[in-house]
Length: 152
Image (tube, rainbow, N blue to C red; front, side, top):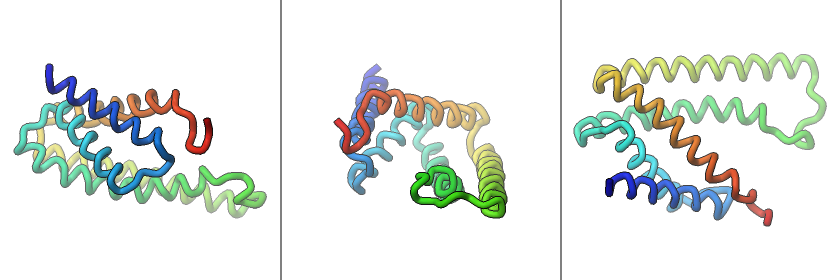
């Protein structure tokens, strides 16, 4: 029961980090990562031995996914004033870039799921997917009620 309280406290702290500013300082990012590690480790019921093999693979996967997701975000999250009217040719190029990046995301997830299944039981790999959803949901829910940076 104490572990659950600790994890809830850590998650609450992580949400307050996002509320303070739009960007995370290196210190806040490390704190957030520590809270994420605690949350996932508990949700997945990882033993210390399992955690030692899981986290390097998971972090490697996340780094590769971040590169692809940044490609998508860079094209789809631009403000209208930042981009002139998109030509037909540019739209085709953008669509190809986004679809290629999404395909690469799927390939990375498949590759790392296979790697994780070699070192963890399938149940714990499945719990990783659930933990990601829960963590993201809790983060969004907490941020929902916070004003955007610079707004009151």
